[in-house]
Length: 530
Image (cartoon, rainbow, N blue to C red; front, side, top):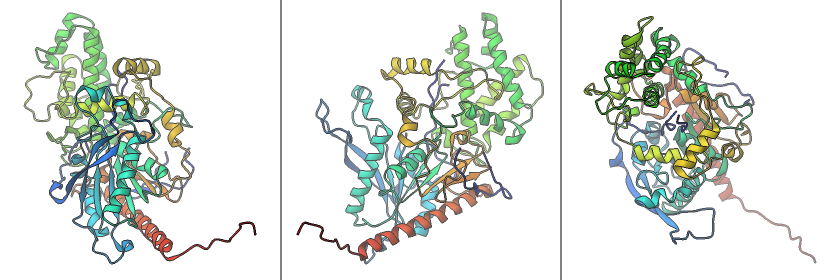
């Protein structure tokens, strides 16, 4: 089996609210923040200019690599359509909104981070979208040499890239006193929040959407490895708007696969009911396990992408899922007590919501995803998961609608050693970033939607007056960061408005601090011996 992956709630009339202040108590990667474009996204590249910069390859060593390469070309985009730049003084220029890029091509974030674009005019902001090292076009090496030099792919190196980029950019555009607000979703939200903690002089505030910063071993209280699967299951019940029989039928479907998968005759029945392609070999128990994992993954992504409107977000922009796709997937499983071939045919139709989004596939190959986009990105996230992004995941078939899949760190480590030649450091993220002890941080908004399985590892209560949690009851994966849509629930509209209020506060505070610094001088007392 593969192991690589990735509550107090106040609700008032369905609107997002900040949680009350209190001390905070297999085989896939965490979704990259904007792997895909939402249905309402716009092609914004025409409003931006593409740039490349020579970026330090290793920020934390003064010894050059053996091959002598010390830099790489990092791609970023600057969009100044709304920027107030013709100011008399530096302190009068507009702020900088900085997308803290994560594990995908940066243009996907640029075209989909609607909160930044829709706020830019109001704030007269300069928009900057930076690409994460090793992703998109920002690769330090080419060909096989890239995979043989993965050691520079870390969150710390990426954040140091961004810190240098912001400093250089502010100097280049003569905006050294412009406040900077960071934005990011999922892993990007984790980076945005951690960057505000580590580089508070660089980022004046951060909007962190669906950021599972409490998903690591060593948390106190401990992380619940089964949280993700429990929330996926909730989305497949009436509590998530789905058919009543769906979760129970799914739980039985895995048992049916296991039973029939134990012999040749049963595997033949599975191939027929699931409409597997002739090339899809199903000759062993392991093959059946892989088929089950493939089907399971569909429900994970349908839960993350459970948006209120048709969206191509979970399909790399190469197709469209229906509105509330989990509910749509549950329709073929809505009949109580389904069994045998009818049950597996229902399972096939359900996963077809994701894998056969076009409706044109004549058969299924369980070794393939819905489209070939992002395979390299997926592989590189696997490397990050094998080093410092170690997130325990488990399922038990009782609290969720799947089957028993315990978290096994030893097996996970063995797999990482075989695939990448590295040994995971499971406690490093908690040691490095503080886990739940982030009370000294400031100016961070953590937003989470309750339809999103990742909220089980997110910040759901206020940590302080300036590190706040916004809960979106009807929200899926960082819905608040996307472009507005007429079908948005009131809670996400309220969340965006609240986020803008915090942005105003942070920008005003930073601007006043810059002005006060510029207008005062310091007199030092002479304490030298007379």
